[in-house]
Amino acid sequence: MQVTTIPFVAHLGIQQEQNSLTLEPSKNLENHLGTVHASAQFTLAETQSGLFLQTEFSDIQGEVIPLLRGSTVKYKSPANSKLIAHASMNQEAKNKFIEQFSKKGRATITVMVEVKDENATVTMTGEFHWFIQRLNVSL
Image (cartoon, rainbow, N blue to C red; front, side):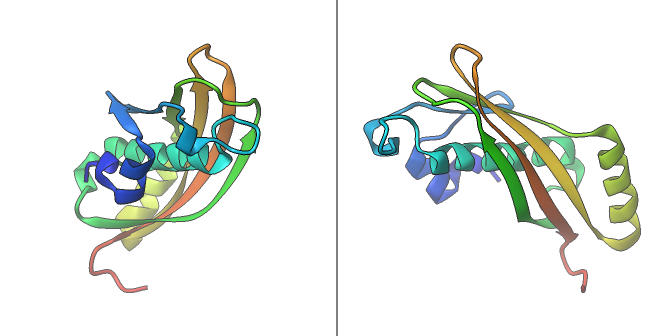
């Protein structure tokens, strides 16, 4: 799935540049302070975490149902310019996911995301906790 075609993601104007997602500020995305709204940054980061999973586990793409189970985010600095999201994953967590998914057809995994502005100032960080299940596997 092309993540930028998800209706809400497209509505916000999130774009893909290689393996990162970007968001240009606009009047429609402003909060009461005139900066990029927290929910727009959250959507950018959450979508980046999903794109990262697609890239890391491309061999099972189309065979699974990924669901966001929870997240923890921290807003660090006001966002006034183009935002760029980058994701990463702990290698130990990835190995554990692969092992559990291979055995049970379902597993959880956490993706870390950092959102920066054009000046490389971190505006938000987050951990996104995903539950991934192979299609046709009963709980």
